[in-house]
Each structure stands twice: as C-alpha cells, then as structure tokens.
Amino acid sequence: MADNALELSEVTFGYSYHKPAVEGINLQIPKGGFVGILGPSGSGKTTLLKIIAGLHKPWYGSVKFGTTGRRPEIGYVPQVESVDWTFPVTVKEVVSMGIWDNSGAGPWISRVAGEKIRSALESLGIEDYMARQISELSGGEQQRVFLARAMIRLPDILVLDEPTSGVDYNTRETILDVLAKLNQSGATIILTTHDISGVAKRLPWIVCMNKRIISEGVPKEILTNENLLETYGLIDRGDG
Ligand code: ADP
Ligand code: MG
Image (cartoon, rainbow, N blue to C red):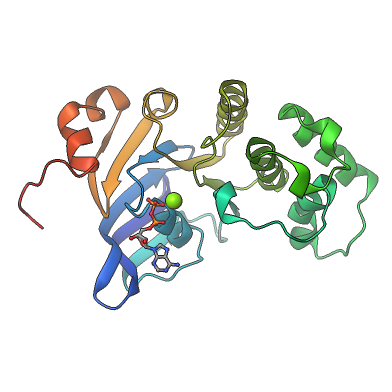
C-alpha cells in the first residue's frame, strides 16, 4: 500500500437493485501515476471516478488511500456536459471556489489567491476570461475553467471525467500538457477518455473497462484489437 495512492478491492456499485454499473473492480494506482480509463459510453467510467472521489459509496468492496497520515486531497473535475450553468457566476468566482472551500475563509479573494487564479488560467490560455459569465463560454473553455479550479488546490489526486471530450485539437494539447506538468510535480492523475489515438495512446498506463476491468497496462500492450473489441462489447468471452 505504501507506494499506492489508491487501492480498490472488489468494488461493486450500481444505481438500481441487482444491477451493478461497476462490478468487482480491483485497481491499484501508484503514487504519481498517470492513468487513463478507457471504455465506451455507459461502461461505468463516471461511476468509477465518483466512487474514487467519494461521491458514491460502494455496495461491496473497499477504497483505500495511501498512508500519508491524512486523507489525500482529491480534486474532481466533472464531465463538462453534466453541469448545468443556469445561475450567473463569473470565471474568477468559479475558480476561486477551489480556494474558499479549502480555507473556509469567506467569499473574498486575497491578492495571493488572485495571483494563483491568474496563473492557473494563464497556463490554460484563458486568463482573458476572468470576468466573463461561465454560461457564455464554450464547452472547451468551461472544461479549462474546471481544470483551473482543481489545479489551484494542488490536490494529491486529480480525477478528471473526459477532460478532452468535445474540445478542439489545440485545447486538447493544452490540457494534456498541463496535466503532464501537474503529474511531474507529484500529483496522481486519473482520467477517463474514449479517445484512443488522441489521448489513451499517449498516457503511460491504460485501464480498459466495461463494467468490469478488462485489461490494464502500457498502451502498446493494451490497445490491441482483441482488448478493444472486448472493451467495446463486440467480443463476449461467455463469462457473463
Ligand atoms: P460512462 O461514464 O462510462 O458513460 P456511467 O458511469 O455514466 O458510464 O454509467 C454506467 C451505467 O450506470 C449506465 O448504464 C448508466 O445508464 C447508469 N447510470 C449512471 N448514472 C446513473 C444515475 N444517476 N441513475 C441511474 N443510472 C445511472
Ligand atoms: Mg461518463
């Protein structure tokens, strides 16, 4: 356990009785790991991330974190399409939420915090949007705002749900660069994707899932036709 950021053993969870969305998940993620979870729509990726982030409690099995003497800080970046921004809030306000709920200090932004926000937005190329309403931004821009909010908390584990879905090529590259830098500075990163060539192939470690884990390893060994056919539901090995 010492070198693992996270260990899931036999984790099963679902939304309705007798119908698990994820089943028997055994997964160990080392400290400083950078892991992509690959699977088709409905395969349980979001559910698994929410379990990791503590938003769902498994029916069975356990989720354990590395022993640092404290619960690790987990940053969770939701799938952008899942968020409904019907209330008026600016980019700066959204990003600064990452600071408030840490300090409990209240709804003012110190100069130091303001600098942190600006530098996070700069690294993502959206510093000019500070005062804009979040609802006016494109999906790719909103995605980067969420990422900035998670970044300024310097989480031990950063969990991102489809951080590159629906973004253009340049934004995808910016997001992957920023994540690689965060990873180099020590953060453990777990993301989901269904983009095999643009994202999965470029990560150091891939987990293929479809309700259960199908295989995991380095992309070269894992992204085989057989694994992909099984992940995407085209091969049935007859074990359920
Ligand atoms: P993915 O992120 O891989 O697309 P999800 O984790 O969102 O998959 O969904 C896995 C399964 O759980 C799907 O069958 C989905 O319909 C179901 N599901 C997800 N969220 C809910 C929910 N809030 N209530 C009921 N069923 C859900
Ligand atoms: Mg999902």
